[in-house]
Length: 297
Image (cartoon, rainbow, N blue to C red; front, side, top):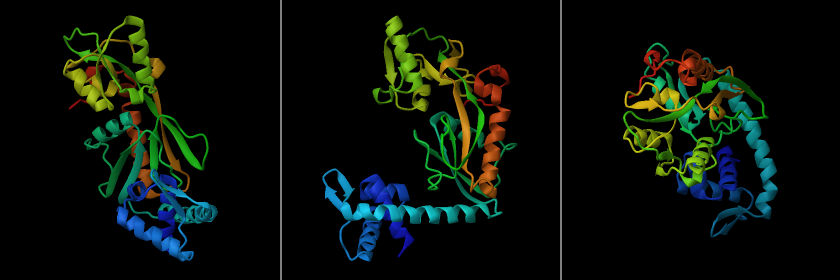
């Protein structure tokens, strides 16, 4: 039995379509279809999924195979993690699962020659709202706002992202720049919504990402919440509130214990920890803007 076919079976079961499984595994939809057919043929050819208008759903035959396939996956991934942990090479790709603010901070820090990564390492920053499953190697490590509460994981606190309300210098508008309705559950969006109820001000722009909000605020569209590291050094912006301690974001580095000693993973983890330590005050918003090394583009 080809392990790659088992991976495809599990991906289709979890994601509900050939297209989504292909995105998760980095394979084309036709390749996913061929491998799924190969896996089904291994068991005499019965279909393992019901083809429904909304996608693919495991039928009773497929459900019966799922526990064994997951056990095989768990064993194969454990072997892969231990193989990676034993490699002394400071080379290859290291995939990091990050939230929006951490993604921007880490990407901007790559240009720092003093705190650079080993030249053989390629950093892959994968931004998502949800933490990647480190046991399944969806990422090698994670830098996240909420650490997981279980799993064979090493977790260490990195620091805190402070935030405040900013607007373009000289701008007098009171309208807000905030997230879209789909992201109304975000702490920053909820904070702005409370201000809207209190003072009756309006919303000038809704944008689904912080870089777009930053651009709108810089253009003078309105005021909004920004992380201090991204706004304090920007000459076009001024801070117009105290630090919003109630929505400050603590960040943690998370890595599977099997991979903690892999040379390239450890190098990236150490690099991330140094960055957070070196820029601790600027990240927290307590350092004077003139002395911060994180100059905005």
